Length: 414
Ligand SMILES: [Zn+2]
Image (cartoon, rainbow, N blue to C red):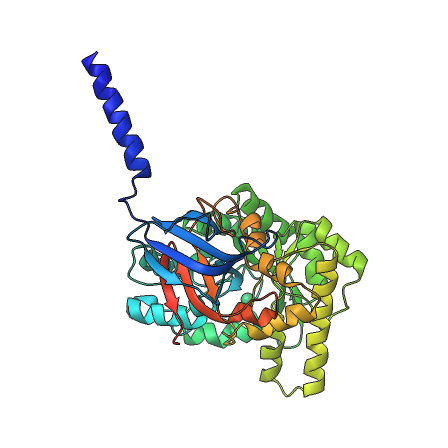
């Protein structure tokens, strides 16, 4: 009997601790306009309570009680969405590439300039140096460096180093071997996944001095099959529609670009991409960055951008899975506002753009039960915007705070 009383008492204590108001939540955002997801209606005057890096409660002001002792951020006039994903970045800038020679603070500063000040709480790095990216990930995990969650493919697979990265790699003493055979490529896939890669990247096309090379289909198939056997997604760099055919044939999961210098994408072509379960990172502003290198006229640039936007439009209208991605780290265009403007010009609504930043990547990469929405139990990864993206999508680039795991990792100057 006495034993049963003790058990009952212990159970009561545990039940009490579970709901104990004295265990104050870490952080509360109040008076915010909150978009819980791209499809749910917003809370006009909403609150979010965060505890231990997770969302404890979200709802209207009346429905959510802010625990005593919580740190409160007044979000009057501000808008909150789930933390953004950028599904096409590179941990390759001078401020990141040799992290062992950089202090954690220097790494934080570079990650902030490039990613966290633009609201990114998770990024997919789709070509870098795996050892170096792993070092940065460890520093973020142990709190030395403030940064986003980084998923990575590590070193990419190409049959020949693309001309536009040759000197960069040489100058930085980075050696990424050309793939010589299917069996060798398969071994490397195994090794990189073993070493921590979350995906694999192939160059279905490699741009060389006077020619665009295309990876042989059997090689692409071997790499993709090996990655899929290990449960990892495959990204493909493409420069033309022939590269897209190799990607389709081999079962690639994500196209890393549109192909504005090739034929436009017909509705039927876009349907084929969707039927092949292919996602797309549009990287529309990449074309502006590339043309700045040459002596292209303003009119030609405008035309190229419009073609890229038309391809995105065809893909989006076909119901394709768009994952926001900019190629930042290869490009120095950290500011995301132009990309949002062009996505909108391509016919995407603010809800579709928000989905490309949140729910589309979390579903695609297997994080949809914990990330991409503001819901009870989800990771407390949030973006606080200065303005409402339903009025103007440029608001997606006007960041007030970036919050990861319940901690403010970026605050704008004013
Ligand atoms: Zn890229």
